[in-house]
Image 1 (cartoon, rainbow over the protein chains, first blue to last red):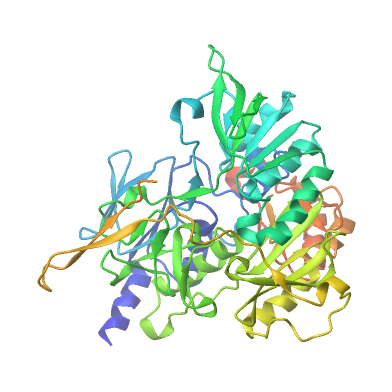
Image 2 (image 1 turned 45 degrees about the horizontal axis):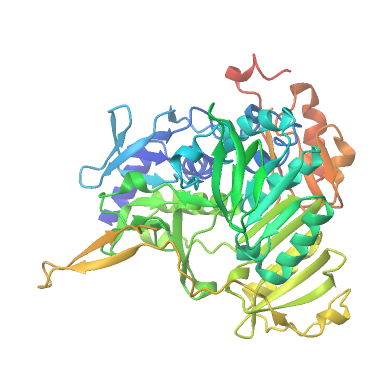
Length: 464
Length: 74
């Protein structure tokens, strides 16, 4: 077949470019070589470092146990790539099959993998964000700066946002004996990811470790002294806090701005792809030479109603990179779908939190093992009568079992008599997720043109 | 040498903590903390820990790369 010949030629001496030199980019590069790709491979990364691991940055590194520069990822194999590090991709010329770089250069490709990930959502007020003492935590450099600051014994750290990153930062502060206030807009820490029931457990955990946790609160302003050093934070309840350091932990923004106007279906929610990691163009037609993987990709997942899901999960980056790389150099019938079971972990305040499935889809949960009060439990999450997710606190050995239940669409509430089932595990309760009808930061798409040949889609980024 | 632990896989059997206590430690009941970069002199310990992991969650650099020879032996 002609198609097979083309793939054979591509594998032999094609040009593959990977934009993004982090976990997904590295694993994809390794997989391409594993698959027998012998052509030229270029990996472009905006940071000047070889691929490094991010999860330790908010844990071992902030605790001062590991230096930020010692987080480089091990290699599964040599990749024989041309590394273009410290230079950002600034544009994509789809027709010309070129990636444009910040230094004015352009790199041509036969196949492109986009693995540009996410960046920290910045503090929205630019002057305040520029104050000395205002930090974010995403990169190695961010971690180095924040660790230095914590080592300087600040009087009080303010963490803005109690998601996983914010909570881990608060945990590290307490372990280092640093006073910390956490301000969270929602009703509890982790409420968006795990719901209000488990969020209440996380709140107790924080307070027991001496965190000054304030929920239902927004930070309205950060105030500096004339020298530009952060001094105070103003909260929505009128409180004024004296703080030396503020860490903005308001989640992440997908790195798709460089693709604006490229014609790809890329926006604030990521790059829409098919389950084989092929990116859609702005019309919703799948491309065959542009792929995406990792935090920046959104793919439909059959287990979860074919919803387009993007996951900022370490394991997702690894798995999706391998699938994308395989599909990039394989003919159609040999391509594989990305059907990863979502899973992540967090360690904070000495507790190992693990999740499988998609908790935020759930309406109810049941504590199937252990007890919320003891902070050792598994909660199974239910959606329309089936198990959709499970969250464990110090129950790592059980997560595989629950992943199997999710894969089998096991009924919810689960029918098995679990080990260590307690009275609170007899009746499901509402999972307590925030109202999905509240406004979001989503982008919108508008149709233009009247006749079928003129009909076009225009992508309109959100102004929020 | 560099290493990474797939903490989705890790189930806190703690075999690595017994075999290479300077590299791996448990934080609380089962949260694993580890040194992602280890002196070459500890390679044997780390390889033993990786081999003993019941869920094979530890990935280690296959060998020291030449360009790292100067900076890796701290």
